[in-house]
Image (cartoon, rainbow, N blue to C red):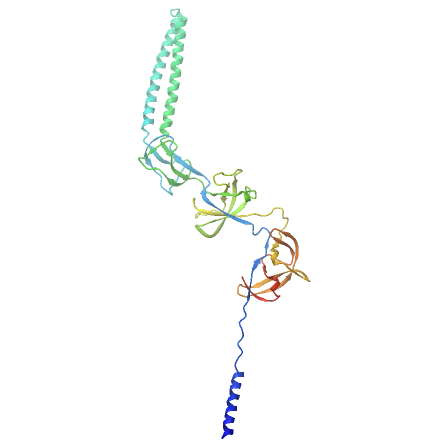
Length: 362
């Protein structure tokens, strides 16, 4: 009886041991070390600056009357296309018309006076030639005629001036274009030179912006740049610098420049906010030069090396790569050989990395 119980206990222990040995081992999850990295580029590739400006047509005309009066007609609406010579507005111009009528009367009166003095001069000349009039009478008649002629010529000029004053009460389009703004209304009293509207007469788009003195010497007329507009997402346009101011604008403490967009697109409209991208290249460089951060370069018995990073962001492998470096610049070490632009390299913690180690990009 006792032996049977002992046998059962031994069998149970044996079964438990067998089940215990059959369990699968649980592997610990490997935590990949995060590594900082950067992409290998040529020197100057990172020297890009972006500045903001406002788009406008290259020719903007401020429309105004050249005389004062009340607006009786205004044929201008936002976005309206107009032709050169098209009548855009008129003034009542009462004062100018009255002055014109008065100048006509003065001209007629002076012309009559001139004709009268001419007849008198002819009569006195005849009497003088016959000896019936004195020399002084003849000279007085000539002087009266000369005065009458001068008065008539002055009256004619006055008529022409008053005609211009009447014409100044009419506003015509000086160029083909589009009305950009209207700042007056019918029955409004306006003065000479007061802007009543703005005409966009150009076809090309310009962008005005200001640059700080830290970059102005790297900018010159004819330099090519790229332009993007907040209203046109995901697209860039070619442009060229057309004007560079030689002096600082005291109001903005920047140097004004003008950029003209060379790519035509109807979606680009005057007044749009624009971003102008400049790429400043070191002219002293005779050829492209790869420069990497000093922190990315290590050294061992075999020489200088970097860790190449291969893979995606979640899982990558670092591989030791020997390189030949040159001078140390303000941007890092110049690389003579061993690297190509576009490769990724680790930029920190080289002492703890191993060749072939799996890492996670940070």
